Length: 161
Image 1: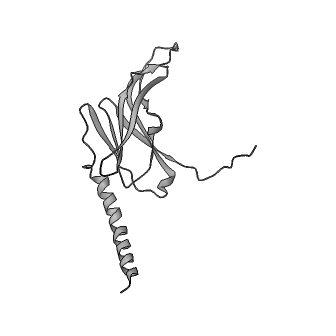
Image 2: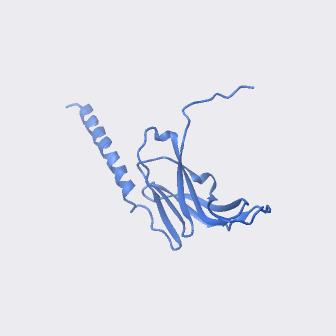
Image 3: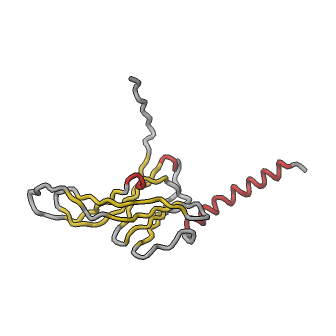
């Protein structure tokens, strides 16, 4: 008896079980901690796409605010953590600053309601992965939205100077 067929059979078994494991992790959130008091767990489950390595997910936490013509900004502290024993990453959005605005004199005092995003820096851009959910813990007063970014297939070359 040769070892090669056993190795091939083992590799085939792993290949068959890996997608099933990844799919169960995407639908089973038991590995992730429950939300702490004052926090909400937001989950983004992404559909499978071709060339997922060319995609990124931008996390946009924010609030609906009544604003005038001034630019409104919110800052928040975000941190990536890992579930012990599982290796799954999740994002925790912590301290959120009160809204700050520019001080332009608006021609009219009209105010409109608008979604104002909180700047969480580099933590906002995540890898696209349809096999695992994106889990975000955020304060109760924040809404978490997201958008998908796609890489352009056309490459440009830098000039040498």
